[in-house]
Length: 296
Ligand SMILES: NC(=O)c1ccc[n+]([C@@H]2O[C@H](COP(=O)([O-])OP(=O)(O)OC[C@H]3O[C@@H](n4cnc5c(N)ncnc54)[C@H](OP(=O)(O)O)[C@@H]3O)[C@@H](O)[C@H]2O)c1
Image (cartoon, rainbow, N blue to C red; front, side, top):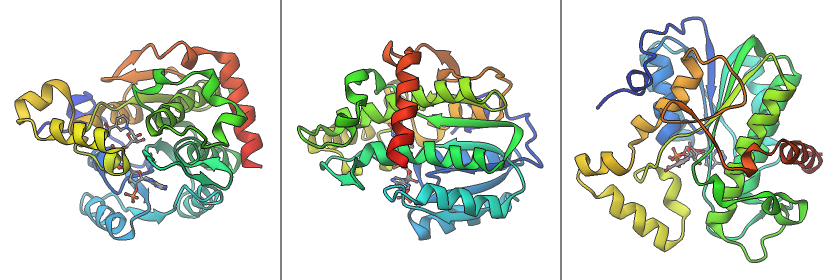
């Protein structure tokens, strides 16, 4: 199976001397992203919740010479992203690339410290992690921030991103909550690019990966749908969906490739136009302020 760095056309890039942090690297797209960046020579720090899986990935990365460290942090906890940023700063002088890949799909209506859980894990956590690393001066001068969004983001719009909406689970719909968090990822990237000219901030849709762990907590119809897809023979599956390996290509491209603009949304290693709401700069500013308020 073709490696993500080959699909991205960056297999010639040498990341020796660069340090990368990939969140959610214990499985799926994040694990494949971490392995690809290690093969390119980077030192790869990995994050996840599952200690056994995290240690196993770190060992695989070490076998590639990546001098890896595994950090455990549950992004459902408000303080975890800040603690993670502090721990990372203790292990590296300069972080060259942050891949905000960790993500969850939550079917049961759940509030975590007063905020809807999907929004907390998929948006508040990468926001807090990125801001804490930035405020502490942990990023290198030309650092990159890659945030993994989804092509599902157009299901959500501004009405999903009010304080009332993100702090309530009345009329909860797991897919809508997931779409909202992924719209927030694109808006966060846009506003981060506008505010921090030293950083190269971009986001992406990785592809549809029916075989990844993302769907384990989805509703029965969604789980059944992705299982059916995952059961397709490989040549057919490749036409309609991705493996975790091929889905890592766009993150790897943004982490290691030559694209030097900031604030874009990518799919299949190409800049792609996101939804109208995801291009709304006023909404991006409002979301930034709301996120800061929620994190206070
Ligand atoms: N799969 C798809 O079709 C698809 C499509 C579009 C976008 N995406 C996005 O791609 C990214 C990777 O997803 P994937 O498909 O590779 O799913 P995955 O295999 O389930 O991996 C998700 C990763 O996120 C971590 N994670 C989940 N909840 C967490 C929490 N509360 N705190 C900290 N870490 C947490 C998991 O850690 P543990 O396993 O250690 O708990 C795991 O490492 C996500 O942002 C997802 O939204 C996926």
